Amino acid sequence: MNGPWTVKWKILANEKPKKGGQGSVIKVSKKENGEIGALKVLHNDFINSNERRHRLKTEVLALERINGEGLPAVIDHNMTAVEEKGLPLYFVASWIDGKTMEQYTGGRPLSIDESLRITRNLASTLVLCHAAGVCHRDIKPSNIIILPDNNIPILVDFGMAYILL
Image (tube, rainbow, N blue to C red; front, side, top):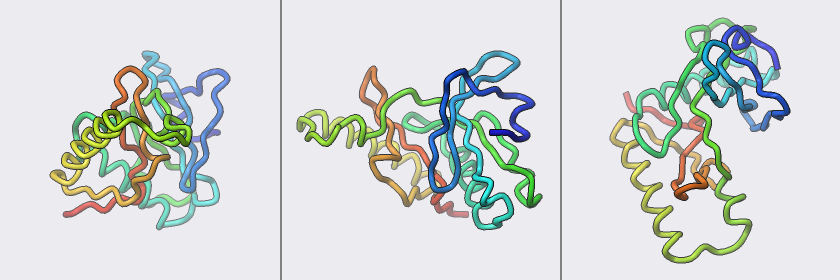
């Protein structure tokens, strides 16, 4: 993985990118202070795609618009270059250290108490999103990360989000 993000960020040793439909995500640290983040880079196949470039920008705008628990925070990005086809796009959000909902459950049913606690927390996050005029539109187990210490769900991947003006 290479691109304009390498000026400020470096991939941590032994980290492997997680590939999705839009891009790849990998754990990085900021060169200046060691801050940890999740780097999302648009796949090279989409480097000249207006639709995919604007989708990544929408993800950044959505996350910047919403502020609260249950969501990653945007740390860095180069979305001002969205119209410059050929230039790799990226953004860095806070690193969420946990398992996706599908990994967390491992195909087993959760207790009713745990299910209700996770659902209630996820609903609170959605209230924040909707109050900010953001509709996620892609809620699924792989887009929910469960924090290991308190089982709080974090909603990620706003690439399909709809933002009300």
